[in-house]
Image (cartoon, rainbow, N blue to C red):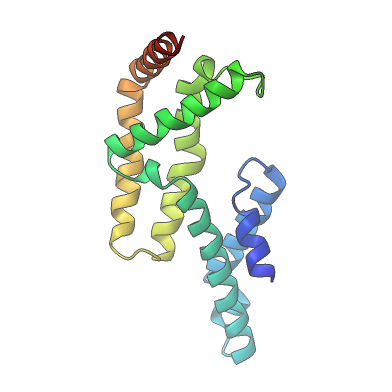
Length: 170
């Protein structure tokens, strides 16, 4: 039951307290100097193995939520535009007070720096994807660099498409 609860809660990346708890669990699970990690006691070894599996599953759930950011630039752009459109629609329909067009560019850079790239590094560290882990990290880093170069223009294009679609519907 707790595994399921932790997995669902892992999708809440905005809660700082949950994030700190998850970070602590990761550090405890992958600390190779801990008593549990170096123990010869079967019960402690099982507990450590379960801890590692649980935290890896939490991170897999997180990665699945943002998988487009760790794929080819075109895939990232497709889903980024769709999310932007969804958020912009919410803003226009007064379901959100935040106009995403104002800070989207900077927000994506922060998202890469403080969430996506660290997540990709953790997935690489635990080896859950084997050699593919390098690919996911490389794509995340490459997409960040592409966003730095092309992100402002992408947002302009999102807005142009939105305005054109909106005009055609009226």
